Length: 153
Image (cartoon, rainbow, N blue to C red; front, side, top):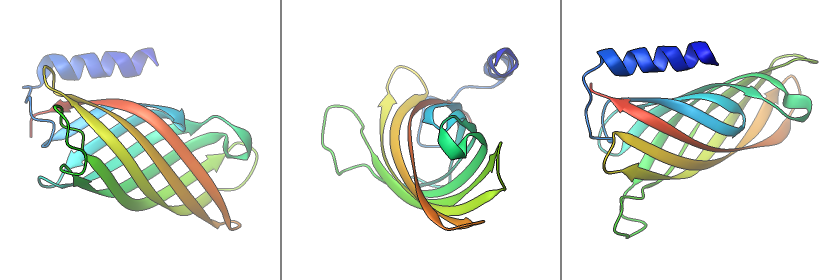
C-alpha cells in the first residue's frame, strides 16, 4: 500500500493539474467489495470508461479482481447546488479467487458522484450487480465508495 501511495504522490508532483473532473484521467481508491484502485477516463462530456484493480475480501470471491465498465452520466437528474451526476453502464468482471477457478462475468453499474469544486476530485458510490458466466453461473453484488483525483489530458 505504501508503494501505491508513493506512486500517486509522484504523479501529483510531476503532472500538470486540470481542475475539470469531466475530462482526462482520474485515479483513486475503492473501498467496499472489492477494495483497491479505481481509474476513470472521460471519453466525452457524458461518457467514460472506468476500471478497477482490487481484492475481493469476503466469501467465495476473496481474491484478485479486475473490472472495466462503459458509463453514461446524467448530470441533470438530481438538481442541487452541487454537481451530482448519476451514472449507469455495463462492463465485465474477472475474479481470481484464492480457493477456486477464475470467475468471468458481466456487470451492470449504477452510481452517483459528487464533484469537489476546490480540487480536481470526485467522490462516488456505486452498486454493481454481476452475472457470473464461468466456471458456473451465479449472481454477485459489488458495493463500493471511492474517490478519484483527475489529471490533465
